Image (cartoon, rainbow, N blue to C red):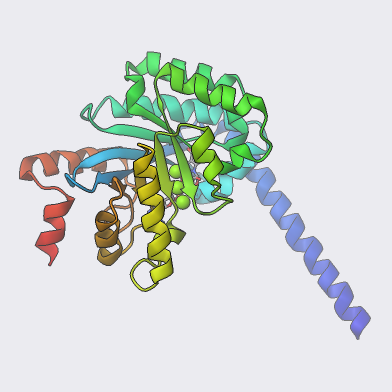
Length: 288
Ligand code: C2E
Ligand code: MG
Ligand code: MG
Ligand code: MG
């Protein structure tokens, strides 16, 4: 019986692994034509200034509408793109699209694009950034690249070289998901990031847990002392929003404010906020 169960487990393992391989293969094949077929799109999640309540940044988040499999999350297809060298043309596309889209909103609002860790070491990245800026006419200061601290895992001098080359072009660098990895203060000492995005896992407990609050508050304070802007990510409740503002975060991002939305919806939201002279602060008061 034990032998039988063991064989079954083995068979099951093989099966699910084969299925996974098939899906990965299908995604990889599909990704090759996805760009050309217009199946990739960018949604934007507005990030709000905690003082003015206005939109400060819009983060571009990629979606894939697969003709057969439906909408696929970037959490699934970005790793496939990363392991198949498709990440380079896909990122170049995202940069171009995001810069062109940002030209359609007011020029005090930046656009943020996520950059895969592996790409930081390629010379293709500065070239793609320059092409996107030139092609759209967007000012470099309005473009922010989001990278995670995993770019430092195998620190070659190359990483810091490319980072400073990118900043020399004039764009801004954000350290994304701070709090999920090693969160080393060394990264904040050695690299002059413009923005620090504090991961939602830090913000989740600020209401109930004094320890979470103390850490989030210290990170916000430290970044402020270093003249680095902060974004509190994944704000899902009004209580978290209140804490983020009290703790002095520069900006807030999360579902309680807005989910990632298509460009047209974003432009409509911007127009309406302007028309009503509304901002997140007044929106919050209206809801109470
Ligand atoms: P990220 O850069 O940390 O982006 C934030 C993610 O958190 C987004 O998920 C967003 O929808 C989600 N989020 C925002 N507010 C909330 C909230 O209040 N609660 C919760 N639970 N989630 C919230 P999304 O769009 O599924 O993207 C997942 C990840 O995929 C991104 O994490 C990013 O690492 C990656 N990604 C997305 N687009 C791109 C891209 O164009 N290039 C690359 N290289 N990676 C991308
Ligand atoms: Mg991000
Ligand atoms: Mg993030
Ligand atoms: Mg995150």
